[in-house]
Structure formats: C-alpha cells, structure tokens
Length: 368
Image 1 (cartoon, rainbow, N blue to C red):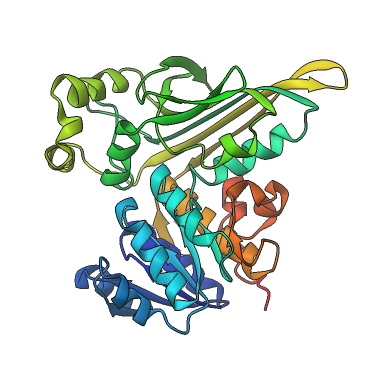
Image 2: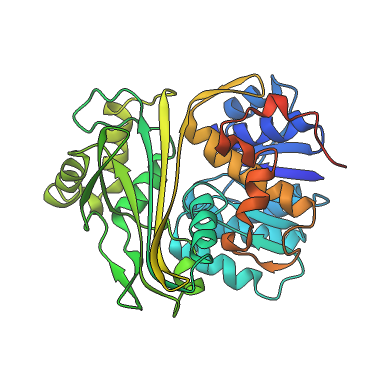
C-alpha cells in the first residue's frame, strides 16, 4: 500500500517510521519544513518538499497514492482533505477539531474513497473503547471518557509538559464541547465540569475539553442518558489554565499564548498516557458498571525511543490504516472511529501497543 504522510513533525515522523518498519507500506513524507524532512530522509524514508497550505500542490503530489495520512495541525485539515478527494486517494487524519471533522464528513459523504478523520488517541481509540463497552448493555445510563497525556515526573506549576501539538492543546481548551445530558445533546463550556479521582494511589483532576468524543454523541443519541469527555491532568492545572485563558484573556490571543507555552513549558519524552472509560447501565435486569483502563508509558518501539503520546497517537493511526488495508473497515464514504471493532484493534500488530507489546516483536507477522 502506497501512503503519503503529509506533515513530518513528531507524530508524522513516528507514523512514517512505524509503517515503513513493517515492510508492508511504501511511505513518502511531505512537508514544507526541509529540516523535518531531512530527519526522515536520514532514516531512508522518501520525502518531498511541498507547501502544506497549498491544496493544489498537495493534490498534485499525492497522485497515484492509495492513501493520504494528514499529520498537520487541525486548521489545515479541511484543505488537505479536499486535496485528497480531488486526487482520488483515501483520507485519514488526527484532528480533534469539531468543525473540521464536520467539513470532512461533508466531503466524505457519498465519496468513492474513504474519509476517516480523528484516528488518534482522543478522538480515536477512546471512542472505539467506549462504544464497545456501551454495546454490552441493554440500557445505557452513563458513559464517561477520560484521557490524559501527562508527564511522568511533573515539576512545574502547571504540572504539565508539552507532549503533542501546542495548537491542538490550546484549541481543545478553548472550543465548546459536545455532551449528552438527560438524553439530549448539548454544548458545554471547556474547563468546566471539574472533578477529582485517584487511580493507583495518584490524584488526578478532569475537566471538559473539546473534540475528544468524536462522533459518539450522534452515534449514541437516543441510547444514552449521559455522555461526556474530559481531559485528565494533575490537580491545580485547570485553575492555572483558566487564569491564562480567561483572566488574562489569552483565549482571544492564541498566538501570544502559544509563544508563552513554547518558551516556558518544556517538552518531555518521559510521559504516561492514562485512559479511563466507565459505562453504567442495565444488563440482565441488573445495574452494572464496566471499566476499561490503560496506562501506557514511553518506551522503545521499532528501535526508536518514543513517548507515550507518540506510541498511542501514531499507533492508533497505524492500526486503523492496517485494518482498512485488510478490508475490515468500509472502503468508501465517511468512516467513524466507532465502526472499528475494539477486538480487531487490540489484536492488530499496532493496536497491541495499547496492551504493552512492542512492535519489534510483531514486525514478522505481516500480511500481504
């Protein structure tokens, strides 16, 4: 399968590396940042310099490919999806942006090729897990989805390190959030709904952030009384972010906020991804609660040291692409994450990263 990866940043680089290592994919990376492309070229991965904001240039560059994987920031998603449609290639991305996803859905409805956005961790895997749990109940009362990408060793006041896109992080802190309350879909405010819980003796907080539900509100509409998604952080983080965004009014000056974050908050590869899903409902006449939880730590995968957010985000994208290549997903039109079987995902060589396996041990079990 010939795959164009548009965006050679941290996650795009990781996806390219993981796919190439299997031997089942012909991978070419596209970006306008020559330095980022040079890092991939040094690993023997084919690259081509293309203006990431120029949809016509992308359309021309991806002609003849089977699929396009978009690893660019959310605000470029719709342009890249339009280029994929014009070029006649299948489209996959990692966006958490609700409006971008709706625009991509409009592009995908009735299209000859597949359009599958939100293929990362959240939205993405979290929706696959929550949908599977919900399907085990005759009546669903409550679905709670909690995800955190956290430093393993927090030291600053925010108790946070940059582990992924600053643009995506700020966007999910600022945009309205979908939820279901009393069986009705509604919008709730980001940073609200603060709650505290502990897991394995560690205290956490969680609060509303945008985009993590993907398309689950629509999929579970009429079937669930309460559904929400919240980001998990260490206690105190939400109050400081609220001070920056609301008291200092940086929600209306995101460029300044991005500059502050990049200057003051270091990145780390020593992180942990926390996944926590609880579903409550009726089964065989009894009120039951099922829980799905994972903690994933940084480690070496395919001979490359990777942070937990790299493993979970790139791993989810690669698993979905693998399942699509094997014909286990729809081959045309708009494809939702919850159309992926959790069992198929976790059995996949990339999905097994969510179970603690290493891809190095699985690279020999490839299929044609």
